[in-house]
Amino acid sequence: MENNQKIEKSAAFKSWQIRTIVVTMIGYALFYFVRKNFSMAMPGIEADLGISKTSLGLFLTLNGLVYGLSRFVNGFFADRLNARFYMATGLLLCAVANFAFGFGEDISSWITGQPSGSNFTNTLILFMGVLWVINGLLQGSGFPPCARLLTHWIPPQELATKMSIWNTSHSIGAGLVVILCGYIMGNLGVGDAHVGAWKWCFRIPAGISFAGAIALFFFLRDTPSSVGLPELTETKPKETQSVETKAFLRRKVFGNPLIWILGLANFFVYVVRFFVLDWGPTLLKQSKHVSMENAGWLLALFEIAGIVGMLVAGWATDRYLKGRAHRTCVFCMLGTILFVLIFWQLPSDAPLWVLFATLCATGFCIYGPQALIGIAAANQATNKAAATANGLTGLFGYASTAVSGLGFGYVVQHYGWDNAYIAIIISAVVGMGVFLLMWNAKADGYGGKGVWQKT
Image (tube, rainbow, N blue to C red; front, top):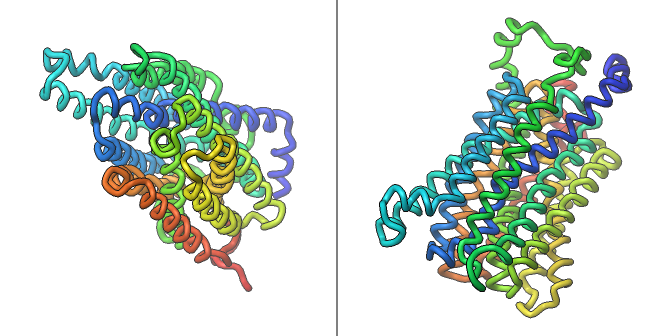
């Protein structure tokens, strides 16, 4: 502990710690530039190409399921490989996939030899679907290396506060890209209907992310030892690591009931979060009669409120709950239930500021658990298995797209928005109940063998 404190107070260590947090924040925000652009493009894709909500929901589900599996698998590799190269390469490939998606019509026309017709449409849908699944596969290389980097540069007793700050990258990326794509959908394209504007929702963010990937390569470094600084915790020789790795992962991750509870809770948190992020533009346009530009700003404000919520949740966890992030999540889910219910009951002609206030309150509440689950998983698994633990909880989170993607697409298309809201509220209630299962759990897994506190 005394050695850790000396390292943390080192000017060189502090400088690299801040640099790592800032650069990974920017990098992960750019992963969202080439992931959440699809949601803003959906109304244009539906209008221009005639693709149904159920089909669009299927795109979201397949992308999310593949992403969750990819994030899980990438957790194993990220704990063992150089995170700098891992993250930069993943973002670059995501940018390439988005470039291809933005030129999907041109590529499909070249493949079929015709610019229209049933053969062209089927080829286009298949091509776009495969590309978005590939993008989901590549997106899994984003968070795991970040989890590795942060747990090597931030001591456990500071992780909730500093990783809550880092987690604002989710909201910064999603917020900026919905503003950008809202502007694109409202101003680019052909004619008053802005035909084809959706293509630029992929091309422009891809260009920005491509440049960001190059920057990651130049500005990131893997661990303190890679820049000549001592590690926060002692590292055993690689030969010993390989012998003990399986037993350690079995004890701290796969045999740890708390990691599985956090994973299950993550499923329900992500159902609520993705309902707003994925269907928000379409919901606001079709059920609340909000323009696409205003919808972009409303979703950006949802993300900004989420940033504040994450920071408050992280601070409150360290300040008042002694690092027990799971307890903070219970209160956050209760607030989420209340504000989703209020938003549902607002009339379609409600003033824009009322929609703004209620949506912001929802974002404030739901982003606390979204950030804290990753922090709790990292602390329970310790920095030796943080990426693997987050890969497992992320697998649950993105399995939720079976509900938030295809499920909600089908429900909205056949039964309307009201029934989708009911499903969201039920999901939030169940999620709060799952968090309550670990109310008496310890804050982290660094000390002792037990996972529960004495009461």
